[in-house]
Length: 270
Image (tube, rainbow, N blue to C red; front, side, top):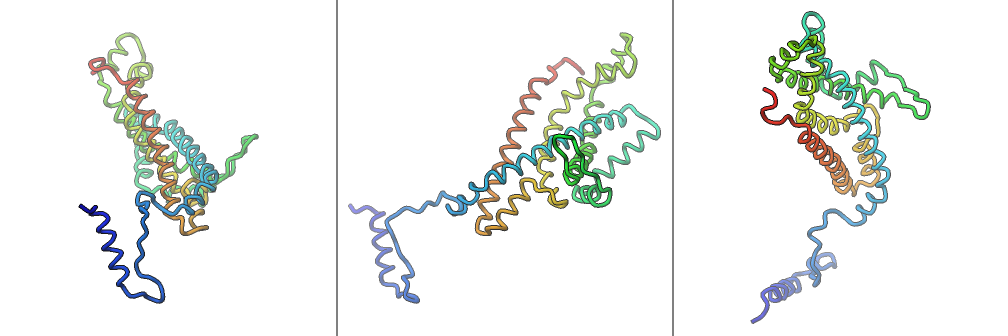
């Protein structure tokens, strides 16, 4: 019995031979080679992308640095803000709450533009290196926006610790501040890791918005590349997406481990 695949190829070749030629070119041609259907993009475009991997790598390093600096600023500002919303009262609590609402309700691109073009933050000289005004504006914009969200993460985790924990601390002679610091805060920080993990991922992806103030992070450098060679648009986007995936996946796994390691054992606290 003949191979069905061979018969199909023979029939297709016969049909192609009977078709009239258009403009002197054969409209159909069959060669006995298997198409590389699994390969996405053109080899020459991938060669262009890999030859510029160092250019994209610098953008990735800038993205990582911007993310870490913004997250740290968000923590330094957001944690006290969350504590004020839980334990504070009066004017300070209302001001912190109002500022948080404004920052959370304002698009991040607007915050960045205001920081760079309206506030006009200066370049910071650290001696060995200097931080450009665009980088400073990016850190401040992303960091303050992150602080507004982190404050809600910490407000929720501080509130989740049972009041009996605070009372127990006071009963052994601790002041209110000491009881919050040594009893409530350690439990709240451990409980905040899942929310903090989500915020870290959001800030990492939001770094792509800094193109609005001319900061050449990963996505901006990718745009520069496929503007130079438009046929490599898909390949550049796929390469950038892979970098973002690696960064996000690595961060999430690290924070998953941290969350499991510092998780409060069941029944340890109410």
